[in-house]
Image 1: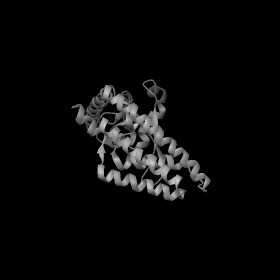
Image 2: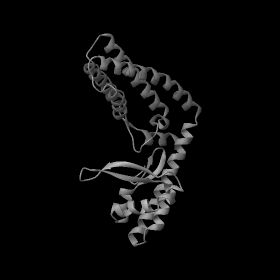
Image 3: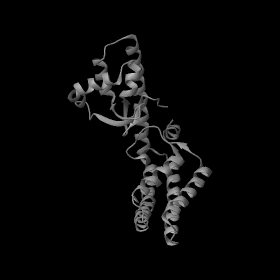
Image 4: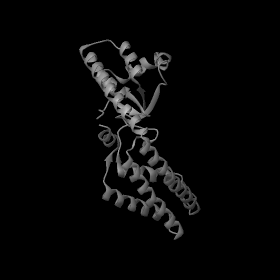
Length: 237
């Protein structure tokens, strides 16, 4: 499975500069300054992506997420040492492993059975999404100052209870197995019904949310968690 440095980020194999700096035994500022100095050169390969991370001091800091070509270019800008050579070699291996995983994911997505299940799941998702949007307006009418947060909260809660995810994906469902897609659909049926029943019975919006959470937790406890990438690779292997 993927390790901590090369990961799937926005559906691509990328490595973060904080861990790269640690591996090269350099300060992160040295690496980030190099990237900014040659920013246009890095972007000749692909879009230079950044994300915010919390540093040990509690401040948010920018981290660059480099793809394979960008990492190799960075390697040409960093002086070789025994530590640097060993680290660069290890990252080459990591990128190769990650490429294999991505190829397996794309093969998975092209399966006819997957496409049928995915399309059916979209209909269920649409019903649950409609219920969540209705619930937002319902919560607003009962005095909620930020009802829009419930849409994201319910989705994150469901995914967090049912799955272990390594990496960052534009659409998590695109990398799920058929059984995992069916699990999501079952959970969304539960969410849809709990929201609509609560609103129909004129429950207080916070109580409805807690009821949804309780029902999803019971379902997750009975079903168990699965690792999205691990399970997919087991099927493909």
